[in-house]
Length: 435
Ligand SMILES: [Zn+2]
Image (cartoon, rainbow, N blue to C red):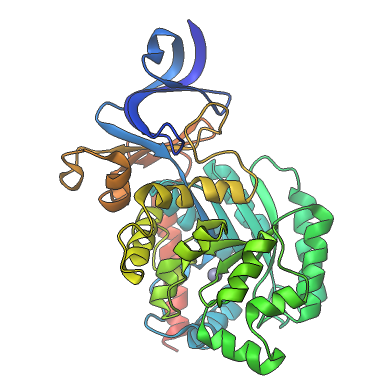
C-alpha cells in the first residue's frame, strides 16, 4: 500500500477536464492530487479518509475580484448608482475608518465567508494588504493581493508616488511567497492619471506580477473618460500601451466590437462581476461573446458592499442565467463552462495550477452534501452544482491538501470571535452614520 495524506472515497467527482464527471476516489499527497480514479483504497493508505458517498466533489472556487475588508460595510448605501455610491458613501466611510485593524477584522469576516462558500483563492484590491496577508495565511487559503493605487490622498498615502512606493514594498516583501501572490492594483482610469497607470505597469513588469484594475464598469465611467481624454476606457488603456496579458481587468461591461478585438489580441483577462454590475445598475458584460473571441474570463463577486455576499456558487448561477437570458439562448453558457470560469480560469489567471481534479494539480477541493431537498434526485452533478446547490451545502473544504473546513466547521478561524469583532465595528460605523 502506498501512503498518501488524504483519500476522498466514492464521491461524484466533477473533474473540470475532458474526463467529465464520474463516481470515484481522489488520492492527495503533499498538497497535490496524486491520482483520480476508481477503487483507490485498494492501492493507497491515508492518514485521513473522507467518505464522499452520495456527495459531490468539485474544484474549489477562485474569486477573482474582491475588496475583502469592505465586508464591514455590507448593507450600507444600498440602491445607489456606482459614482454616487463611491463618492457619497464608500469613500467618506473609508476615509474615516480604514486602518490596519479595520482591514484585519474585515478580511477575517470575508475569509470566513469565502471558506464557508468553497473559495480557496481570491484576488483583492485594497489597502494595508500586509494585514490581509496575515489573515490569509492563518486561514490556510491563498490570495493575490494588490495594494490599491490612487491619485488622490487618503489615510493610506498622500500622493501617487507614495502609493506606488507602498505597492513596491508590498511586492518586494511577498514576491515568491507560498500563500500570497503580490499584484499591482491601480484603482481605475478615472482615479489614476496616465502617468500613474504607466508607472504601475512598470512596477508590474519589473517584478513580473499581475496588473489588476477596474475597467469599463459603468456608463458613468465612460462619460468621465470621454470628457477628460476624449476616448473610451479600453482605448485609453490601449493608447497608453497598457493592454497586456498580465492585466486582469475587472467588470469590462461596456466594450464595442473593436475594443473586444483589442482585448482578445492583447491577452488581457476579464474578471466578470455580474451581481455587483447588476446591483449598482452598471450593466451586463457580454461574456459569451468574449469567450467566443478567445478572451480569458474569470469570475469575481466584487466587495460585499456591492453584491452583497462573496458566494461564488450564487455568482456562477447568476452569470450563466444572465448570458442565456440576454442572448435569448439557453446554450449561451453551459454549466460546465460556468464552473470552469469560476474555478480553473481564476487560478490559471494568476499562474496557479488548480481548479481541476487531475493528477499533478493542487488539491483545492470542496465536498458538497447532496442529501438536500434542492439537490435530489441527483442526475447531473455539474448542472446541479451550478443551478441547485447552495453555499450551505458545502461541508468540507480542502486547500492544497489541507482540510480547512470539516463538517461545516472552519478549523482555521474562530467564527464567534469574528462576529464579535464585526459587531464592534458596526457600533462605531453606525455612530458615524447617524451623526
Ligand atoms: Zn471592485
